[in-house]
Image (cartoon, rainbow, N blue to C red; front, side, top):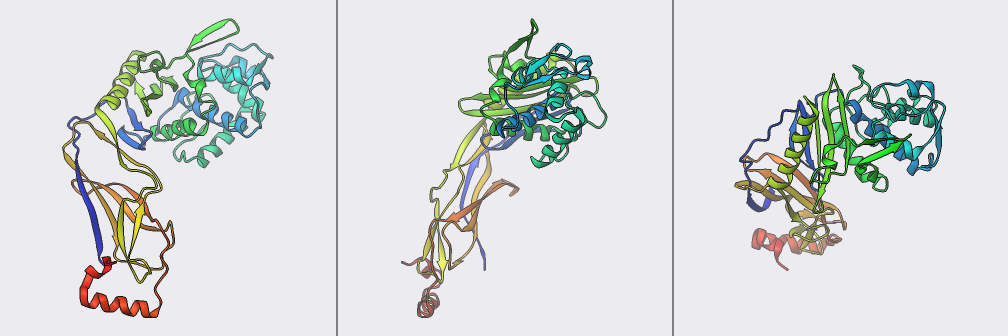
Length: 377
């Protein structure tokens, strides 16, 4: 059987500018269309520093959602937590701290003492908590991440990629919308010490709502940022920058570029018949095809002819056909025929096969009228 390519529509697309960044690693992502707008060394292993605290919090949110931990639970501050250096929440030795305060102490203040107190309170020891972090990382698809502590403290084997940080950020936003608001808090006061969130986009005119900064001498200055504007969300990951000032300027520049230079286009609506295709040997001659998901794409606003949409299927489709059976693919290509994305298309109804005499009659019509008979009512 031959392959039919139909609905061959070209739209104008050309990225007339090349995105660049001083960051050693970078990734800019549109959450609605699941499109990577720009990436640089996205699969390089790197020191994530405090950005890996997102994983510490992700594991906590999971336990809260499952009922294993409550926001008003209190954990005791151990000597190990109290003595920990780096950024701190300034917890008192042997004091009891609520889980909700620890959340804010980790997200807003980036407290290493808060991370260890949380880890010990949940799992008995930081080491056991880290084991749970690594198991959960594997479960949610962080294939290149290895955690050695709950804090992001420099360790040659504590490694992530920007692509894994993207997965983690997206999962955090989608899996825990009821807790995500903590990432947008600008400041938190504990023990009479007020500290501001280090995320520069939260204080900018972009009104960022997450997620976490990081800095070590090993990894440089980094940021996992998220900004929502007019129901469109961009996620940006940067690492390896030279200063806090450079991190602020570069993150603002790339986020603004993502919103101003790119737009989202609705290609196909969910559960809407987009075309008919012929059926052979069935009680119906044609079936409608539809997508179970809304198909949107992100393209530069400066467009020149470069993208193609097509529907691919074997013709004719052989009966019997079940309702909602996959029968075709919707394909988005570049001008050079490089495939960008594929989406499954499904039948809108059931088509039983013809009986023996019906098949004989259909074969006779095909011999007389050829392929035109396939679409005859």
